Length: 277
Image (cartoon, rainbow, N blue to C red; front, top):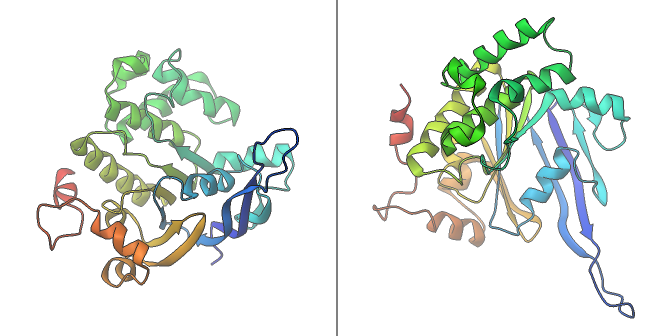
């Protein structure tokens, strides 16, 4: 079976800003990055701020043009396809951003937010059909139907992120990029959102590219891990390999940075697994 997403030798350079008489070399944000995401699996791209992981995510979404390299989604290039083909592919690729306060349009009700993508992609035979689907989506993310006519400012951060997840699901994607989806939330809310994402992945057969700086959530969410440092992947492997026998000192340092009251404990608090009922 071919991978859902295949990233080959991605490189991204940004032109340095200098004076009129200066010629500075470009800043290389991403160096020769390659990885694959299989159907129904989660690949975590891990690194500190400035490691290049978010730049890779933007290129994987087709929102940023790489300097060189390829991004293939279901065997098709996201870089060279025409606009109409890109629109069709966008239905299959969705993203959940870090900030639930900024990712939703403050002037749109939840109903409008959830049905906008359906209208663009021709989902639902009528407004009644789309409204019914919006109600089902809210139920999927454990939100009441009464939320449909409310605005983002009326919800907590965790509730807004649930709405953002429902919006991503509204066009029936097969692949989702999760860009630090819980880092702006309280710890107790983080666990609820992580459990929700895992539940939805099982139910819908979704593939995830999970972008994070926090290894504390990686073992719970991911099947495979790529560790990034200064624009390069310095270590990769399945979760057991990365957590049980990290080969790179940078990976070991990230693991040591995970907060814990038990100096021997490194795995995600079991309350995440218990909090979903």
